[in-house]
Figure 1 (cartoon, rainbow, N blue to C red):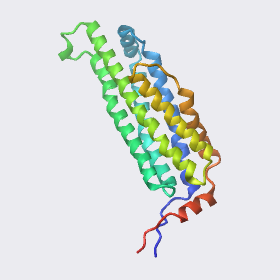
Figure 2 (figure 1 turned 180 degrees about the vertical axis):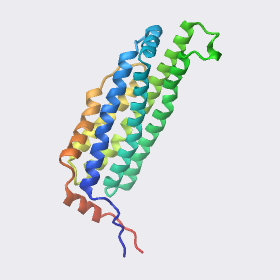
Figure 3 (figure 1 turned 90 degrees about the horizontal axis):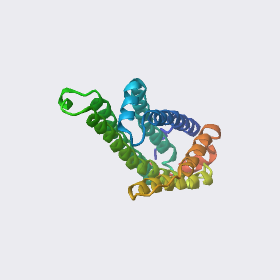
Figure 4 (figure 1 turned 180 degrees about the horizontal axis):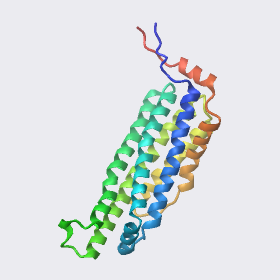
Length: 239
């Protein structure tokens, strides 16, 4: 009988997940702050003027959001390594939801880059008036907003299997698992309400579980003995 012990020590994996997850937060906040600074709701001309006046900052916002999205893949894979002894199928589902969200978010950056492409007024847009060019650029921003809302469905859904795994783990507090599953509902309800024409704001509900989870990973980590017990109870390959 041979067991494969390739896993990192649980506290190392836990701290790595916490650090990576924490890095995502300022990157995402920076990107959102740039969008809030340059986009004037309903005013294509003012929005175009702001973007052109702060083009370098706007580009940094795109890169920041892209980095945050890609780092989320590393977060999911690290947590998969930590939590797969609890339930490998649920851990895999968690990663799948993240990968779908990542894919949507990355492709959605095409709309944001199209804004810069449009406002540079290439030769093939020279037949349009400046007002039409500005309206087209604003339209791409609106499409990007819709793409982000779709992605947020999956940024919510991945938290449900994560919360379930935390709740069932035996080496992380059950209350964190419950809060993460509630966070999932917040993201999904906000996104679906948007498509149904309603305005909801469960922002604090959505982020509370995630923030507490990040802090726990960084400060407390896992109950190592509990993790070992769960790990030993996982089926191993026999050679």
